[in-house]
Length: 349
Ligand code: F6P
Image (cartoon, rainbow, N blue to C red):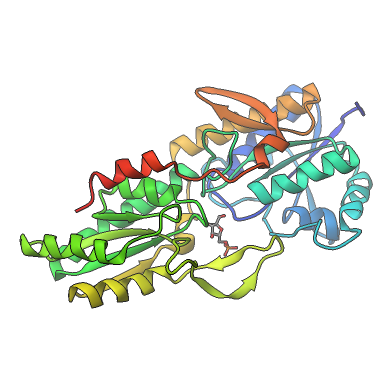
């Protein structure tokens, strides 16, 4: 194992509340307890690929001290994929050397961590992963930070639209992020007691949903709330905002709320509107749970660097923070199991 003096840290992919908690914990432990220097790499993999004038910033304990409760990431983020164009991965490795980065903590979801895994496999890069995503779709960890905050925000939104839906005798459809995994919607649907919750894992039957609201109307409740994941499939396809794809090949999901509202209105005759929560779910201060989880992940990631646990990702298993291989971590998308969804279904109506 090459000696470690300087540890780089980057945050990639969609931001998630808690990223600054990881940066703070990694920096404080590395500097105070292990005597390493910490170099912040800005804008995810882009910072290591493009080496712009402002691609790095040294991180001191003072820089890290008051950022725990800040949303976003002080390092910025991007969806740059160094494995998209030939030769870019080599550039990343070369630039790490130029920056004198001996070890790297990569904080991200399956895309960012997939790149970390390949850099470790292909070039032996001394990298440790840290799982982040509001979508909670990473296998190998019980949960990711950002998820709790996103569920809390979406739950609050459901609570709020319910009162206005009731006042105006409307159905309100709340479109929730999460890509192809229904975790946020499932969590918010259960916590917010939505009348119907729809996730990408289960194709909805629109007539059945309409019947739920017709039955409610018959008993005097001509209103209701539907929580729907942006990735819900209708007529065998999901709905996208446009034809654009990001560097990892992901479509920009969005639009199901409006489509569903139209379909439900047509079938029930009840005024049906929609709201799209969008990036509100990713912004702002993390919940206490996400502050604690991101801190624990950051501390364990720093320890993994000290131990030379390369190619590993920190993960929550039960109440313990452990390390698992990046291979295992990025193998498959974690979706909502059928039995959990059926539990939510108990409360439909
Ligand atoms: O992966 C997090 C996430 O917020 C998804 O839930 C969503 O589909 C996507 O990112 C949106 O990405 P962007 O902010 O790049 O549009």
